Length: 321
Ligand code: COA
Image (cartoon, rainbow, N blue to C red; front, side):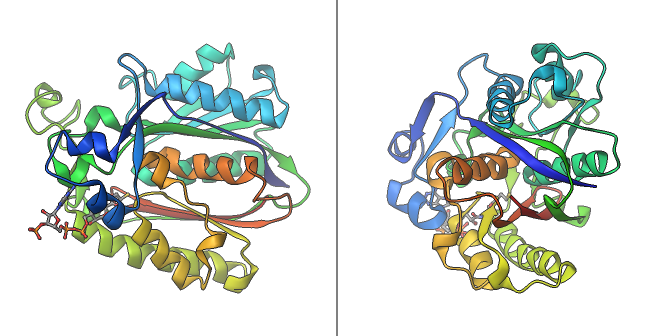
């Protein structure tokens, strides 16, 4: 048995913060941000609007696209590092909103790779016959942990959510998933506090995303090259077999490097980061939804998803849409 993506959805909060808006907040320029990152604008959750709110919108759209109702859903997995609360996990909050009772619901915390990690776990549930309708979501409100006075990070991040519905199928579907991590890089990209380490500092000085951008960049490029190679080698496929690359949307130059490795023209890369910046776990499912809804990704196309994030964590998934 295989799993296949039956429907996708995405949601971006209404408020848009452009590069020109950020020019008024820190010492930067629209030109610098576009040249170094490819980002033009990002969406910011309204006060009080939480990760579960964004997830709910994306999930509803994915369920509608898949033609399923809340009653059909028997598994919820949410990739996020910005949960509403420490617990209940965002999966449970979402389950309650959708009026579902009893099915497993949990979050996966793997930073920007969170969606690919969640998809991999959901695929295992579906292919082993334990789920007939899995809701897999990447949702983040990174704006809440971004230092809006630090020009080296605040230009990069934004809020959003993307979702897919996974169902059983006779053919793939999800062809293969590949995950990895290396906690040795924990000091290059991190949020310094948590309920178990200096909980009193969680909302104090320095309680924001910390990043050594330049070093993250180098490891990201190298790791993404090897994870896409691993996905292709595992399936004895040439780069030319891939119809679409749906990368994590962190930095245009990182994406270009991966596309180059795959010998793929940028016309075959779904690029959305200009519109919402780095939305961490939400970025891959949002980009997938964009490509599907605008008609570029068609049923039967071979699509390569990839992501890299804090941890470091990384993952790739080859799917026959
Ligand atoms: N506006 C203007 N100048 C800025 C700036 C900004 N927003 N941010 C940094 N700078 C300056 C730096 O201070 C530095 O100045 P200096 O040379 O006088 O010291 C200069 O620009 C170059 O900085 P550097 O960090 O080397 O730039 P870069 O080309 O590496 O680009 C990033 C910075 C953050 C865009 C890039 O490193 C990156 O995208 N890294 C990966 C981050 C990422 O993807 N993280 C998430 C992974 S999931």
